[in-house]
Image (cartoon, rainbow, N blue to C red; front, side, top):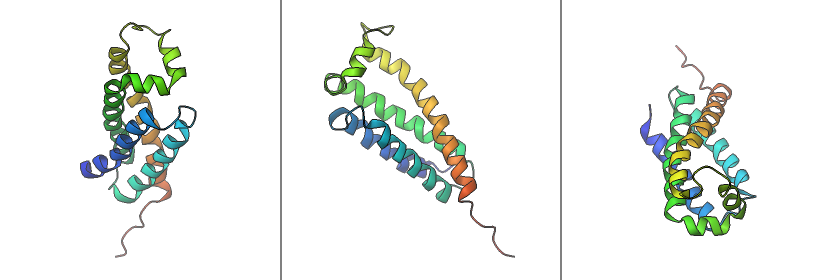
Length: 135
């Protein structure tokens, strides 16, 4: 497992964690994440020595730490810039403790998106497979 690659790719997640708090509107967030997932998948396929799915999965788990951390730390700003999320959170269990709810639910989203990132990385690994060395 290439932990350096995982850490380097997770920096996209750190950038997005901060960007979603301050600048990226919630309606456009999906497009940014899609681009990041596709770029990560390609870079994993080109730089990982196998284990594409696991590498992609681990990138998303590390991203989860950054995202939850930023959203909890800057909770008021995040909610001010994401009114649909604030409205939805009011109807969720633990609505009286939204930061705790984020901390508890964040890893579940990390696992879910990790499955997506892992699948994309695996597909990219098959598409961009390195040719076998000539003997």
